[in-house]
Image (cartoon, rainbow, N blue to C red):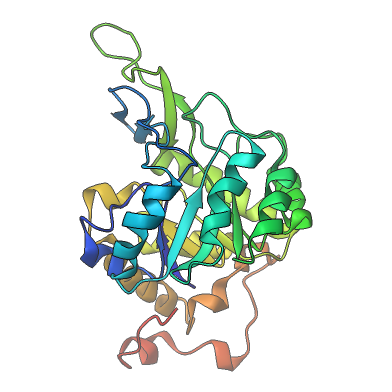
Length: 305
């Protein structure tokens, strides 16, 4: 299991120590041309999370490759680049110049941003087009706000995706207490945080039944227990999002908490619990994948992902 950040939830250059606590860093979404994003107000807190309507603000792929990427590489952490656009050609325009960059480990195709007016309709078409110009591992980041997310996942896999990122934020609205008008200038925004977690679990669980692709599970992860649940639902890796805004130490804390959760259940490694939620009963494991909790807790072993 690897621990990542959700795209847009960590400025690695401003918080390098937090980035180095991750197994891979995922960039903000990059588009072909620079974007200023939406007008303020672009972020609002809710009772159960956060709404954002940043609108894919970024310097554009040329400036990212020339300036941001070399600086990110100095962190010594594997880099995933989030690729965005409004048409298939946009994704190709970003992916192509990244195809031969050794600093880039993988591409995450942002196919479901709720904070812009135009999103690609054909997931398979975008994945296939990027696959044709890049040999990098491709992760399709999908929205749960579709009739059947497992069907969308299958379409991405058929088109050449190497993995899935589940889930992106879902559209939500907050009203000002005094004026009763939308808090965000754009009106709605993407909801993340605790309210998203049951939705993410359902999407991961459904997609694990439909595909054997690696899955990065995300959505409301703030504790080791949350990470454990995503793994049990079928995620192979976990990403932290909103929690990073309030707790830069979240990666190391969640690792520690996950180790304790695993130990309490007698699991040696996070990999042993992946997909446990699909078993009709508690998973039956051989002794090589289980230890006595007391022995594990006193062994000094850590959670090596």
